[in-house]
Length: 343
Ligand SMILES: [Zn+2]
Ligand SMILES: [Zn+2]
Ligand SMILES: [Zn+2]
Ligand SMILES: [Zn+2]
Ligand SMILES: [Zn+2]
Image 1 (cartoon, helix red, strand yellow):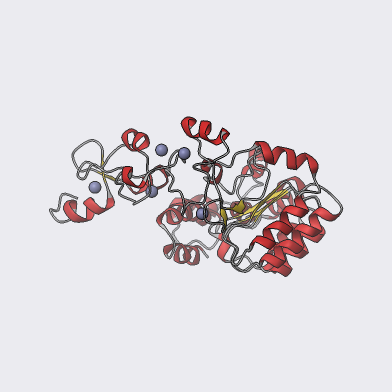
Image 2 (cartoon, rainbow, N blue to C red):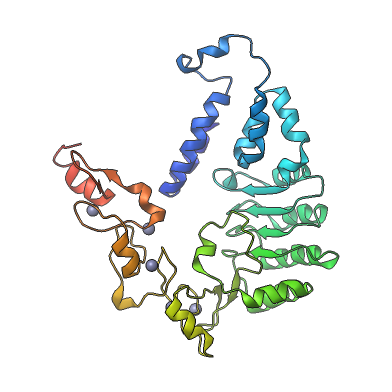
């Protein structure tokens, strides 16, 4: 199983690999068929019941690890499956996202016993409209529904799910649908219409600028977000993620009727770190080719060789510099360090 996960991860970006490696490093210790014995020779002895502390940890585990835990032994399996509280917020992300099917999702969600509060399916490409609807019908109290880049879903399917959630109850507060194909203005209008049944929400939405940082950690159910993540860009009129500018000087501009730097990422390039708008002529060079404003560029640590920074999202690609402090970027590492054999 861990090999498969590793294989799937290889095809994705580097950050996934790092993440999967963390999980894979946990899995073998849970796998009774593990071949290398030396680290785990303890298991020769008859295993006792799990330590009590382990049960306390369960509430903090990501889904993948929770499922792995439930495979460990009977008492953990019972603890995991019978505790409804562990299943009220379900986040499906890497590496489970590529494997999870409608059937598995329905099964996992059923453990919430109809009380599911938050559901995040991050880039779960195998989930279809039917699967989502089944979960939503059984869990009418969902607060936050995140399905970004679930490319098996259609705008119509999402509308059906949202209608189901807003018909009787008004619990749905936040919807993330960025990356679903073919969302048109009329779909967005229909979704907004469903949301408008909740007047409290409407008020909140008006007061809230959408800032870049809100999108940084999409899978966490942050409290403040209450709305639909997509909007119609005032510049190009396409349905996209439309952001406001967090800069103070720009905020002043926003008070004026002409909202200068509100727009989608194509119309307005934004700094990867602070979300501020960046003029094309003031773009600073980075190793990862992400956009940074001058302020953020100056603050980030630079590669010893090329003096370019990574943005924080890609900082894990720094290689340690041989015999010196600081670090070398991947490009320079391949070019110089390998070549001269200082590695
Ligand atoms: Zn635009
Ligand atoms: Zn910046
Ligand atoms: Zn701005
Ligand atoms: Zn470099
Ligand atoms: Zn970057």
